[in-house]
Image (cartoon, rainbow, N blue to C red; front, side, top):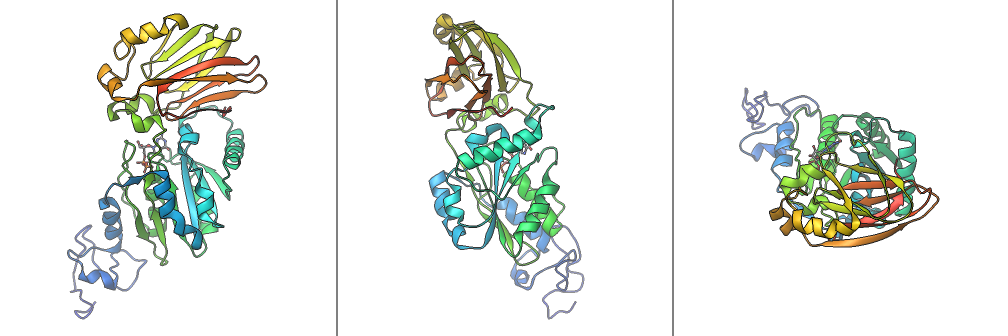
Amino acid sequence: MTEQSGLTAGSKCSGCGIQLQMESPEQPGYLPAQALERTPLLCQRCFRIRNYNESSTVTVDQSEFLRLLSQVGDQDALVIHIVDLFDFHGSVISGLQRFVGNNPVILAVNKTDLLPKVTNWNKIRNWVQKEAKELGLKVEDIILCSAKQNTGFDRLLEVVGFLRGNRDVYVVGATNVGKSTLINRLISDYSDLEEELTVSRYPGTTLDTVNIPLDDGHAIIDTPGIVYETRYTELVNKKDLAAIMPDKPLKPAVYQLNEGQTLFFGAMARFDYIEGGRQSFTFYINNRLNIHRTKLERADELFAQHGGEMLAPPTREHLAELPAWTRHELRIPKGKPTDVFISGLGWVKVNGEQGALVAVHLPKGVKVIMRPSLI
Ligand code: GDP
């Protein structure tokens, strides 16, 4: 190493302390020529980590995001769309296809660890494939993964390696689906970084668009997390987030209900069984929420008296911060198992042997749909 290169013998990276060098990009301590101007001196590896971590926290709504993304269709790129399996219909970007043009999309379905331990994964994959198609998404491959358990990532990296060719990789997703965790993995795989980047528990904390240069001259492009206000997780007070976001495998709660019965999930939601014979309903909702059963005719009064206290969380104070509840009446068809899906909260499976008329009460704006059963 010479003085001319701008590095004095013994120059160390101020991030990790490694001896800096300008000869081999693949070797530790590499400092690209353009980085010589920067003070303090940082090796490429530390520079990437810092840059990634220090970018401001930016989230956008879907239309803004799709505008940002509209240039992707003109480029030759690989797109990884990451969704949360627990909140599939709340986190999927339904308008994505129009903007990515002919570029391949890999659908990474994260948080598989939240499904019950005994799960038929082939069935889940087929379900995802069908639902994605219904939503107009053409996907090259579906990877079921869990950033938490570190499963599925090897397969994902394999597919990325296979499809990437000579392209940049865009990573897109809603907030809180595990995008930072995934990017972490990609960076460490493609540029030999070992340090962990920041991940956060709260929605909306994913970093702004960041280009993370790879050793081959291409980049991983992390895009802002999209905020879908129709997800319960975006509405609740951060303190109540842990009450609705499971962090352990769901234990389905089976309730035999007669018509005219109501269940409260803390004060997060209310489920009325209005019409139909005695039958079982299976609730895939965070087990931390207390379920309280009552008569439908008593439910309004019970909520008025005890919402935010005996029925909690949220507490009265946080309940007052949420939009008032609206009632969604749903007729569940006879014939096939159906989920009543509540974005960010979970779902209720109805067997479909006899059909049912139900109503769900939730803060206004939270998305509720019926869908073919996931499990
Ligand atoms: P981002 O907002 O999409 O970048 O998501 P983060 O990577 O910050 O993760 C958001 C939240 O989801 C954090 O609380 C993570 O711990 C959690 N999370 C991420 N991946 C997984 C996963 O595979 N399983 C579970 N259960 N939680 C996850």
